[in-house]
Image 1 (spheres, rainbow, N blue to C red):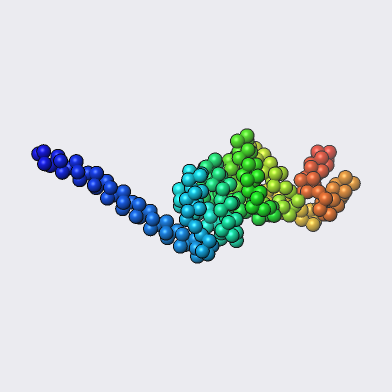
Image 2: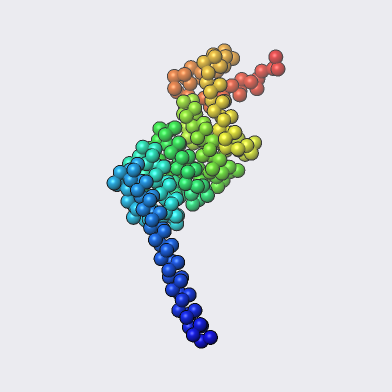
Length: 239
């Protein structure tokens, strides 16, 4: 019995060590696979140590960091640009509880749709977080809606900040999904900026004619048209 107890006392730690070594070996193999995958899209610049540094800095798994950086590289950014842009994306994962795909795809979409730069990612993330903290809307909903409506909003001269405001107002007023809000706004932007619609609005009053003229010249946004239209409609009878 003493011999069995002694052998058990020796063998248990050895088994634990063996299991730990197997786990480490498996992790190293998976890491090497991810680095090879990254090198296919980013070239020899791909560096696992830099990914580990980001993972440690933001308390994320290596896989999450690798996913974020790989998505950025596939979007056309260099390895160095992707590492820099990964930081606000990882912050979004931590703060807004998004996954790697949601964070990178959503933020990249905003940057490209509004003609922004990677340097603006921290600002974008700040606007989304502040809005989500102070209104009945989530960062995830904002990003989904922005992806649906960003390009049409930009074409209608509506700023990123104003688009976030519109999404937030609709979220608080309707509790609809980000996809539904985005589709609704996109339809409004498209229909109200249509040539025939603008001609109709311009015929309602001299003020509307001037607003439409400014919009067509790029000196006003479709929101200015909406505001003017709202004022005119309030003064009209049912006929």
